[in-house]
Image (cartoon, rainbow, N blue to C red; front, side):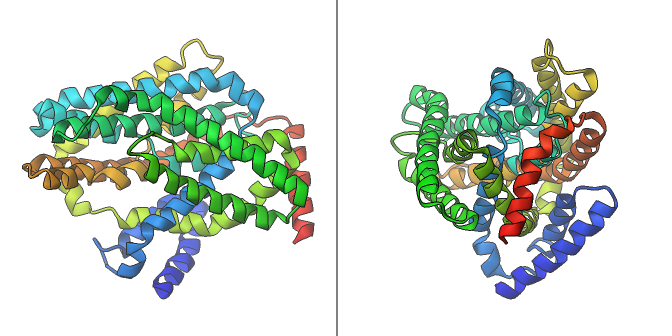
Length: 418
């Protein structure tokens, strides 16, 4: 396993460099590398590595969300918070409704099966979107209007909302749902509980870090370990109380930033170094899960329903931005940034099929849902990441020079510490 991981790391660094030279986001190359080496192409990735790929992807996602929290300015979040909530719900609902309406005629699914497909496709990819927004925030692009912060917050809430809706629908479909009202109430409960728990832990950690003053590396290790335990707690609690662990992870970083900006930037700089490793593992492992043969089974009808769903989503996203201070090119950037699919689709695309097998139901619909979910990754992740990066670089205005002063000073001091 370790040899296979070493091969992916070395080749991932080379591919990342090559694609950046071509002005294409490195993650696109890593996705392609993962697919090429994965079990559905050359099959060169060790099966033992694939068996633990879920844990690797989780750690990488935690690194992303910790960095996101450590970049979320309270003032900026207050300015864009309300619109971020709207963006988290409306585009997903419109996209899901469009897919539900089109599914019976295009794919031969029932209305409920189409709704399940819509709930899976309506989730944006935190691995792609949040990563790119962090890059823009670090560069100060769009910072004055809080555009990357708004997209980052909205995409994270979008995933919580969509996954809960999916849980409700699959429960109804397989006859295992106990209380629809409780499941729906779980959306705000999980969000609030995640934010509250993360905020409390953030305050406690800040006081501990201030009291004992450990090196930034040890602070990062504590944050990573606690974040993994939060995700574990979410799984243990899900049968009796909903809890959004990944929001709690972001909230911890947010509180530390509010309490001590220097400490937050110092930790973020360390996480940035870990991300060099985590990024390669995350995107190569996501790419390795892509089964093109399954995606092709969806055919033109699958591609058409994905495309029409994205059109509906784009209309909803643009509508949410009406009346904002954003100019037309900036609104179009948000629309494009809100398109990539990858992480959630890879995680739960096959879940309906598994649920149908357990329930003793016909699995034809589950196979179609899986095929379309995989196709959505193939069609939107590389192209969406590239388009978001290119449009963002051209459209988003760089904040004044003083925006970077605090961060630059921290990076310099952190470099001297090493």
